[in-house]
Amino acid sequence: MSIGVFDSGVGGLTVHHRLVDRFPQADLIYLADQANAPYGGRSGEEIVELTREGARRLFEEGCDVVVLACNTAASVALRRLQQTWLPGYRREAGRPLNILGIVVPTIEAATGLPWEHEADRLGDKVEHVDILGVFSTPATAASRVYEIEIDKRRQDVAVFSQPCPDLARMIEAGASRDELAAAIAGHVRALATRIGRPPDRAILGCTHYEIVADLFAAALPPGTPLIRQPEATADALARYFERHPEFRTGHSAVRRFLTTGEPGMQNKLVEAFWGAPLSFEAA
Image (cartoon, rainbow, N blue to C red; front, side):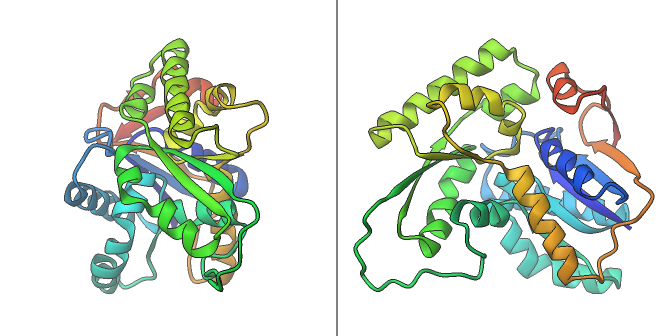
């Protein structure tokens, strides 16, 4: 069987790339829903339906575990699919199946605490507050998932989300580095203005942004730590497979790339990130 990686577009390749490094013998199938990308400006119901169809397609291709390598899908659709759709589909399929996301590993990396941990709210005075900035799509920002879940675990971390409209679309379309640098600098300035100063740390809360992580690093004050979702997700998935040996990952190092959009070669920005030409087949 295989590990499935789902995203609205090419941003999830950053997670896929790290999973290839971590599980070199595993079979991986990547599905980009480019016909409907980006998800960031869509309604919640649309995001749930599109994510369900993406997960279904990957399960039909033989995946046992599907990783939602899309913050918008993971923030808006994951819990609902796990609770209301997956149990019935799992019974129909007659085999262990699961859908996982990248938000939980990111929050664990940001807090340094396991997901199950919740803060003891005893009213102790917080001596120092760590300012954490989250750059994300409008839909992820509107969900407030990072603010809510981090606040449950750490009272000394204040989270400020900065929606970045159109940035994922620009990356998907292969915008120039100069155009992307200008857009990212504008979002960093907007967040710093709203907070009153730059953040102490930052989460790149959209996997597309990982492709241009160096541009975020250049726009932020030198040395600002970036929490990297691909590494956090790979670490969490390795722990998950240790706890759940019933899930099979394959052992033939198969790599398939599917898209609901136009099949063929991806843009030069993706090629530069991947390190080689990358071609998709029609989903």
